[in-house]
Image 1 (cartoon, rainbow, N blue to C red):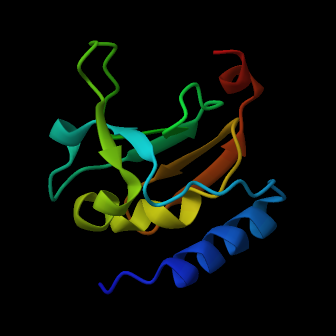
Image 2 (cartoon, rainbow, N blue to C red):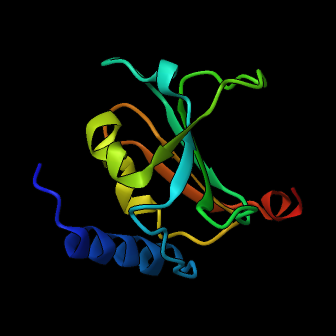
Length: 121
């Protein structure tokens, strides 16, 4: 998959329009938390959620596959552009503003929703 940032941003804007969500850019050089050890070829479901960003280089996104863990080392800091190698299907959701979540499963299952509790962390 060739990296074309403008095409990915256009898809992010489409997702926001589809779900009535505000668009908030997540720059491709910014940091997200990814549970790297959870991603295998059979990794499902894939979860993503966005908190308000608490750091200048972060954007508030956390992504994992399968079961969530509260272990302190569950998430690793990763630049967004590395999702092209890890799980590129998640890129189109990263324009959703803080408070939004997504869940991706088998057979093209997709659920996107707003969770106000994410804004209080």
